[in-house]
Length: 353
Image (cartoon, rainbow, N blue to C red):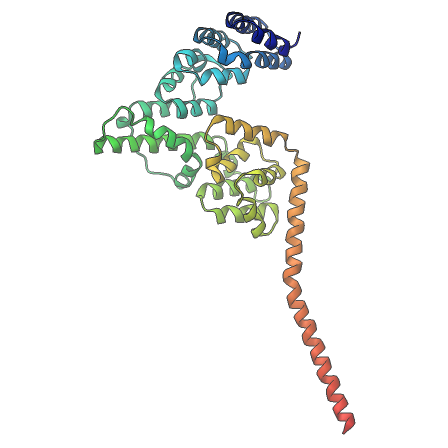
């Protein structure tokens, strides 16, 4: 019997049976030592359509069961983590299916209740731990002088940090001193988020060879983080070997589809492509679902198809170069023809004499 058959049974029966099916399916899954991808997908197909129709107790039971499961279905875990902390807490504390990026997004969306549960995780990323402490006790945070790249990189995480900033001021008054403390917390939150996004890239940047793709990525990343569109467009034109005006048109759209193809043609990894894209299009990623959609699109975009698009852009660059050179050549030809005509008329005049 397929998962769709189970859903139809649940829909036709009363809510009590749907809840029993919801719990039983998760319990059976958790008993599997090493579930296959197919089994993980079947559980998601079965439980997610029932999610809105089951009680809080059932959601709490499933969250606790999956928190101990090593191969928990990611989509179901994320859905449960969006619930109030009294339901999501076991997953926030123990689940391996929740990544560091997911944790940051959850803190940004749900604030201190989720952050305090996340703080209880073993082996929590130190940067996330510092971020949570900064949000809980903003007056104890000391502002550091920004580094050379810090100011520019802040733009890449402004959307997330702006969500975090109000959380640190929910429980404070409107007094100027408290407002300054909240601003300090927001600034430190930005810096910590920026540090996480840049983890693992700095070592590669210092050893990048000028003639490798890594160097192209470093230039794209640094120019994107400046917030100056012209700088990034120039670096993109250099990386793809296309005209600046074409590179400008790639980032002038309301969506990042063209930029996605450009980055895929350079064979950038998913995290590097995402960092550049979120720096250029920060408003396109207001929630984790947008990030997941980006990753899915990037994975499905074949490199050969992306390179075909780049070839078209290069052909357009060549075509523009030819068109730009055409007027000068035609002027030369016109001048040459006019001189010949003048010489011919001069000869005719001499012969008449």
